[in-house]
Amino acid sequence: MHLKRVITCSLLVLVMASCTSYYETILRSVDPDVKYKAAFEYYNNGKYRRSAEIFESLILLMQGLPQEDTVQFYNAMSNFNMKDFVTAESNFEKFATVFPRSPFFERARFLRIRCLYESTYRYELDQTPTRKAMGVITEFMYDYPSSEHFTECETMMDDLMERIERKSFESAKLYYQVEDYQAAHYALKNVLRDNAENRYRKDVLYYTALASYKYALHSVRAKQKERFLTFIDDYYNYIGEYPDADNRKELDNYYSRALAFTKVANLEEQQESGSLSKEERKLMEKQAKAAAKEVKKSEKMRLEQERRLNRQEKALEEQDKGQESAK
Image: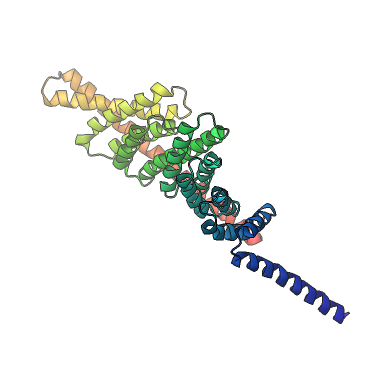
């Protein structure tokens, strides 16, 4: 039994050695026809690493021959099928530059796009590769409006554009999350200045209004009127486009408080100028107290909501810890 096992292992080693020997012989060969045939045998059998190495070694041997473009194209294809998209993209780019009249030209340009697309990152990370891919896709779609790959290019472009737009929105929103409301308002405004058709437009306008309200709320008294007026403008921008939004009620409440404050501020300015009667001053004082009460109530509600959310987050954390301990 032991002898049979030894013989079997020996045969396997010999078979593997013979296979390796054949591959190395092909790789060292200077006969382009032999190497060309072997490279396609490996490629067709899904052994892309070996086919890539043989095609690579054939490039110099095939220079000036009719098969030169085929060798370079399938060298790139071998790397593509190995999912080595960086090397494949470089191969396809060189191919398109050197062989503009090749029958593989259009496909090489499209596969370069696929390589660039596969090399992009999710929206939280650097979007430089995304912008590069979008530029190459745009060129391809312009050059080949009737291409069979046109629809796929549109799908890739839409996905890449979504990442750019989300990155822009989330980066601006981060200022709001860290409670830098002035910077948030400025950044969110710039999102739509750069791209008015941003698919997150509704969220951008909503957080723009929230940021301007909270910036006004936490400002010194002398600056509040001007900043509440900015919020009122942002409020009208939002409800003008999204009158039936789910969060309309929240902004309506903020609008009422901002409006009350600006009215009081106007009365105070009139009082300082001496243009108010005794009755108007009494009315102003009454409205000022009401506005102050509303602002105080708003802050209390906000703080209570934050505490409630914190309690919910802690409860979820405890629940997760309990589940991990049970495992």
